[in-house]
Length: 355
Image (cartoon, rainbow, N blue to C red):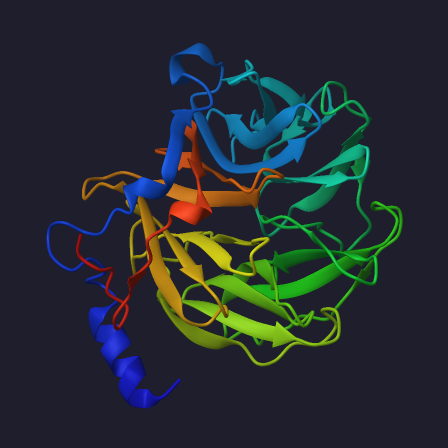
């Protein structure tokens, strides 16, 4: 990134909305709801949702319990069918034996043919956790016993895997036990055997939780959460084995999770916090090339002490885009966007446009 542009972006990063009436793009939002009422569930806190399309509708998962890092935190799911979300049920926990239980973290769902894979993490902290996996052959009604993943394999750390043309499932991952490091993991047999890349960044480039874009020429692009005030990006032309040096994008990042989906029409849709700090604004941007992003929608905008974070985004077979995200650590919100109704606006020097 050119030094002058970087300076301008740093100056404007803290001022990410232009004026008091930011562009909302509400015409493209066709549904907005909570998956559950926070009063009717046994967990007071929840975070880090994931979702997939099944043969019967949608399936969402998240971790919930007393609060993040508490041993009672487990993995919960809810089904969407017939226009309604089912009552959440717990499908995984970190119980080791009668006297020891660890918290669960960051579930990731993936539909592999007729089977659903559920990846998640177990352990006292992100520095010490390990990966586990369950599967379901009946659209998430029942689940197998949990299998611990091999040493050094975490599974997709936050965002969904992508199936490559060489039939490998690429799982974007990262670790925090030796600095913030990103790497890629691969399985071609639904998690029975694995490969992984070395760490793809130096310790000085603090990035985690990559999400993957697939370009028309099979080039891969990752976008990463970072502590550098901006979303970071890198490219691969060999099915994710080797990657270019990470570079800053023009989009701000308050050290919070992001997610992107490669849509059927060739465009990319990104959900993120367009801020350099805090998580009280949640945005949707759209791009044709993964480099120049335009404002698509504003999902949340609360200048108070609120948190809207850790989005997950997919496109279903009908072309609609579904997004879930953490709402104040108390609920999981579900928003549906019609990409044909997006009226994109230019984001100039990192500033979200006016309405």
